[in-house]
Image (cartoon, rainbow, N blue to C red; front, top):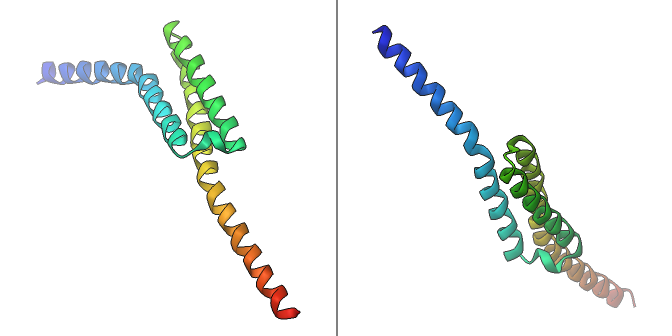
Length: 118
């Protein structure tokens, strides 16, 4: 019984270590997915979104270099920032068409109001 508990404890400890090493790799994939989503949403054509997309790419690139040097903690921080910037780029890319449509509708309303006043 005691041996089984010790074995289970060792296995859990090893699994925990393996999981800890996997985190930056998973974060790298997550940041790449977020960057790809922002690109597909047209972030490059929206100035604010394009800037955040560029930062996300730069941070991901820096994280890769850090991972090569086995600086996992620093890489994890860069990857968190990269994912946040990519998600913001995606949100800004989605907002731009909605804002343009709202401006168009507002302009139509103003034209209608001017037509009734005259």
